[in-house]
Image (cartoon, rainbow, N blue to C red; front, side, top):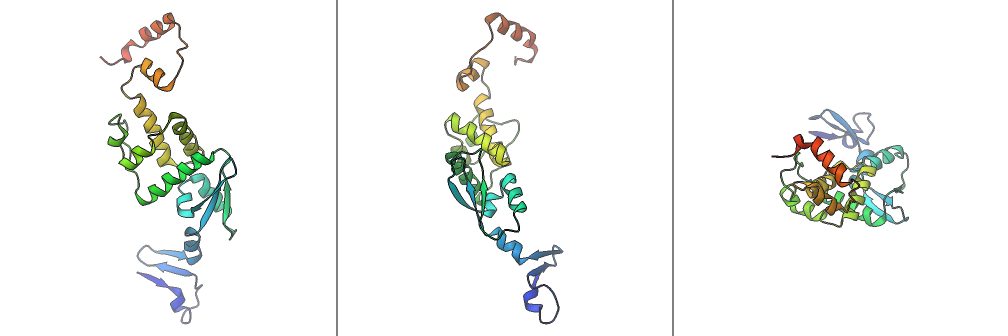
Length: 198
């Protein structure tokens, strides 16, 4: 049951911008509700601005903290993100908007499959089916902006690319040069023989 004090303000002296939720024993400010429906501009490294609903933007703990610091400002807030390129920020926003409408299922650890479509919903699996450069930029952006579901998804994607592969296959997948000499590699294999699968 929720009572709007606007209706009772002539009978009881109460701030008319408040509502009291008796079921949850909470007082809500109408002003708080209004700020949640506004928008904020996220500014990329290149200076491009992306208007985003505050609810979507607050998926980022970094942005959420900045908005709380600027709570006194009534204007549309601009949040500079100097570590995030425009193309990457566009993908981050796409993720957050979709996540608001269809939250991603929890990613089981360890991964049950190397196929992301078997780990998360199809949209999320398709979202991370990108070139490695963009995937790693998404990881960096998710980490910088502190968006846990996106960081979980992108890191799980990298883990799925490694799952079940030999060191040589992993080097090839990620274009990593082998800096061990054949003798050093043989020595490392001998020292770690116990951890290899039978």
